[in-house]
Image (cartoon, rainbow, N blue to C red; front, top):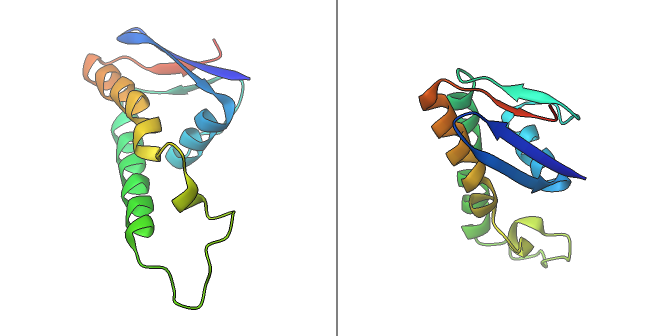
Length: 108
């Protein structure tokens, strides 16, 4: 499934379901067939995404414990495309929409 985020201030943004649902979880929005991020909520959403990006980057840069081997499930290190890169278009959409006083919606 795809998520199509829409705003009257920007072009539409299409994301694969797992990526979109991860971003929505980070900002505290339920991942459902429809939803809205109001212009007033956008600032907090951007802050939440930035905080999670910083947390993951710090975790990736931290030296691994000496007695632990990296396993195949180590998502922070094995991430092919970083959260910073996946979230950038969404954060831009939120910032531009908020500045224009427009909401971001999906599924409508």
